[in-house]
Amino acid sequence: MPPGQTLATGSVGTVETRYVDLPEAVRLDCGRQLRPVRVAYETYGTLSPARDNVILVCHALSGDAHAAGFAKAPSGSTRDGFGAEDRDGSAGKGLGWWDGMIGPGKAFDTDRFFVVSTNLLGGCRGTTGPSSVDPATGRAYGSDFPVVTVADMVRTQRAFLDVLGIERLAAVAGGSLGGMQALEWAILYPDKVGAVVAIASTHALHPQGLAWNSIARDAIMRDPAWQGGHYHGTGTAPGAGMGVARMVGHVTYLSAPALAERFGRRLQSADDVRYTITEPEFQVESYLRHQADSFVRRFDANTYLYTSRALTYFDLARQHGEGSLGRALEGVSARTLLIAFSSDWLYPPAASREIEEALRALGKPVECHVIEAPYGHDCFLLEEARQTPIIRRFLAEETPS
Ligand SMILES: CC(=O)SCCNC(=O)CCNC(=O)[C@H](O)C(C)(C)COP(=O)(O)OP(=O)(O)OC[C@H]1O[C@@H](n2cnc3c(N)ncnc32)[C@H](O)[C@@H]1OP(=O)(O)O
Ligand SMILES: N[C@@H](CCO)C(=O)O
Image 1 (cartoon, rainbow, N blue to C red):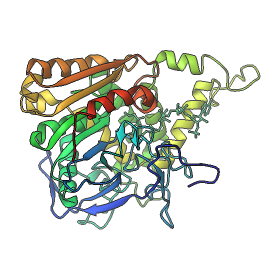
Image 2 (cartoon, helix red, strand yellow; image 1 turned 30 degrees about the horizontal axis):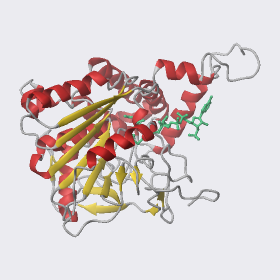
Image 3 (tube, protein in one colour; image 1 turned 60 degrees about the vertical axis):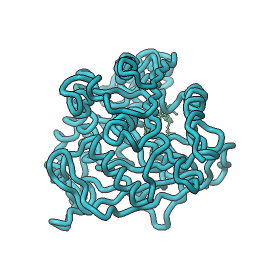
Image 4 (cartoon, rainbow, N blue to C red; image 1 turned 30 degrees about the vertical axis):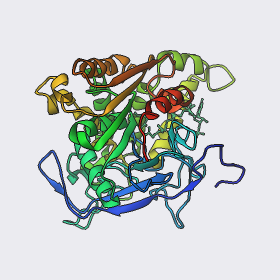
């Protein structure tokens, strides 16, 4: 734990990311198979003797397996090492990205549940992804990595849980892309999931969301340092494009009122305007550059491309329902909890309501809560106190032995 920090009440304490190598190839939607596949994971709490108290937590675009507690820095860890960085990537703080939600007495209560968190397929934090070595060439896959889908991520999680000897999940939960994975679980493995908690998520990203993701990916691919996706080992990486991608992405995770309240039109310098086109003149510009710089230090550009592509392909109606969301959800047997935030225009409450209505029309158990909060999409990371009672009450119905 870093000097000067103490464990918060309800913390899972110091944790370490571990790794599992899957025994078999993962079959992908694109028709290719991936082997070998390594999965990075962390666990919190205690597995019940009946192995029936497992909650799988799935992360969003830029998360990793380190969801809770303080990371135990592996000796000799590098920037690309795993678990040594905190929720925003600043080495040394080491707090998991959903620490406010996972722990004793928290939303995902580790006094009751055994919480498992994995880095998703295609990731850059320990699970096999485009920066992993391609056994066919001995070099990083780069853009030769197969295009993966949310369903591929879920199949990988299923295979990983088989290795751990976990057959059924009491619940699967996540925000944003993590919520997509949770919903996909309920469809792919209906008899293996007791409950779904999908927060700030959707059944299919709307066209404006597709557009912003497209701009972000283009920013990376148009950076000459991207080199067609084969920049690993060249000593350079598309940091400029990644920075722009993150700035674009980060604005979509916020709301106009949140930006107005936090930064207004305030200048970064205490003095008057400096008549510059290159320097961040406004506080909001400086903030975005800071977010870009932190992100470039902690994340792989190709993982951004593949993950963004996966979340844009995600469309439950197209994948499973021949265009009908209701048909796609017909086989779901899990109880479903949907949480959305009033200011989230990227994953708007309307999308959660559509899922709710489709499940309700099918007679499936579902509840949907829209929390009035101003911070936009990232509310699922910030509004822990308001999500906690809803989730705890919902999960109280799961009765592991
Ligand atoms: C989702 C998953 O599954 S995991 C991934 C989750 N993590 C991320 O997305 C990381 C990046 N995102 C963020 O930081 C998100 O805003 C949140 C929601 C996670 C955190 O929000 P907050 O705690 O409100 O952080 P905030 O957005 O205010 O950013 C604070 C940072 O901006 C910096 N900052 C604030 N104002 C300025 C400014 N005018 N100029 C420069 N930097 C600034 C702060 O110094 C701070 O820096 P630090 O993080 O290096 O300490
Ligand atoms: N801030 C989150 C939002 C994506 O949904 C992330 O970077 O993963």
